[in-house]
Picture 1 (cartoon, rainbow, N blue to C red):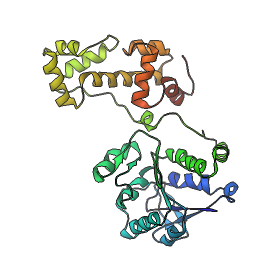
Picture 2: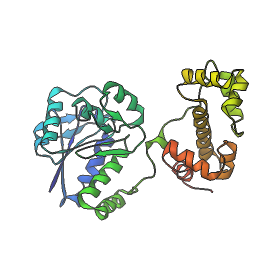
Picture 3: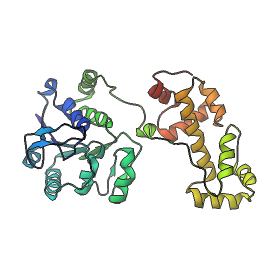
Picture 4: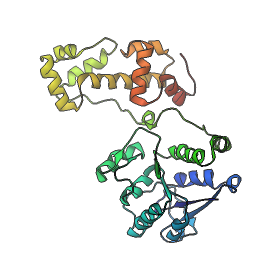
Length: 313
């Protein structure tokens, strides 16, 4: 029997907590897994959804757990020292420690993510990196399995990670059966990069007119020389000053603008892939696919299916 314990911190995200409960705690899995909820102090625990949950066990439950799941919580204050100590002791004793979404902040506060790659919700990735520079935060993947420590990206990515752990524990057939029961995909395309908000870029102060012009002419094969000529600079000077202001090269910035426009067209139009590639200046459909995969870790058709429920090639 594999013992799974979810640690509910104050302000636990109810959905994050429900994920391991559904994957590991469902009655169909009771021959394989036991599941219970613990807290720093047993009793009712506030959630972000306006209703409390009941944790019957205290931190001593972590000492006998094979897997510990820490769901996301708000606000993102460091847990009490007793919680961090219990997590460290359990990990040192061989427990597999898992976080869902912002639960990674609790693992980081306990020092369990130092020197490791980790995932969290894309909205909180920079905050986690800033607070814990010893952690390598990956804002694009759905989850990171680093052996004894695993972390998932935002909210529903916890489903992907928990199914992955079942796959490791009991094989693909068992994981697929649980996925069918939950009516979710056993595997999802891409990472959370495809879910990150991509607002319309604000023109750079020094090169605002050129940035606006470039976005209006992105169907054309623009070069650094073209951008520099519009701005009235020598190409080398333009490239150096653009990098200093934007933090990226002109062509890298332009590719980002093209991908952002491609995303908009995939979400809101029925244009073919060829038409979108041409309109955004991304060349052939093969080149469009290559750039899209590099930026979002999914295909253009996969992105369209995600946001519109259908595909058109």
